Image (cartoon, rainbow, N blue to C red; front, side):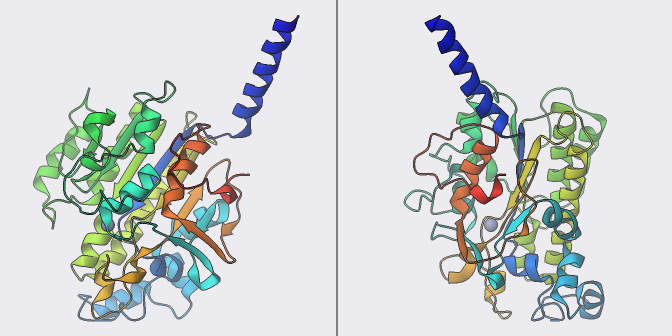
Length: 360
Ligand SMILES: [Zn+2]
């Protein structure tokens, strides 16, 4: 009798824990260096008609400018404003007091991705963008070690440093990044075409491919391999900004917004994912605001480039929309939030807290 009672208690405890959240899959998405200023305010008046950073100011103004920032942001990122904010949450509108910051003081890419993925800043060791295998275990690796997720974690990135950030070798997570082709397993027709096109369509950059390849490789993986945890790291926004191309930066933001729409619509149309998949979207760092120089840049010399934003949509997240009110969040909260959504305790004491407002 005692034994029976014990079993009964354990099973009740287990059931109540597993029933708490509906999320069974998480898709984590990053857009490199996309400022909160554009996310919440659309095209920037200081840059949109600047012939120094824009090929055709009249054309770009016609496409993106409106005196109303609400119209501007919807024009720039329609999925964010018509779906993510209506059905999920968006953090980081500093005009309303809602703040999200990096806790690392580097304010550039590898330290930002390490903070997002590991859940803590590591300024001592992660202080360059060099191709050094990450000494920290990311939440992706942590999950890939769990029985329920093993072999069901995949990562795709435009930047060729992602295999090191995710520590592909140690973690065992397949990372397709840079100009890597898809070569694992039986290839789909689309993957074969992507492999050819990636060779033939030149990227403007040496270490970063165009996001179209990252996106479609990731989408093929989602549709055919059915990952439980998928990380997609888009890169164009940052590289175009560094290059002083504000028009391309805006077009990339709009295109990536549409890629995320495509992913969300697929998720909500597929029995495997529908109503049991959460998507978290964020960025590795912000940028400056001075049109003459700092908007192109970020890092220690641009203090405010630690200002970022986070979006969350899924079955466990209340549809509170644009988050308001004086509240401070950090980049280091993403990793534990990902694990928590999946019902996993992230055993990493240094990691930031779960974003509790993102849970019903
Ligand atoms: Zn970056």
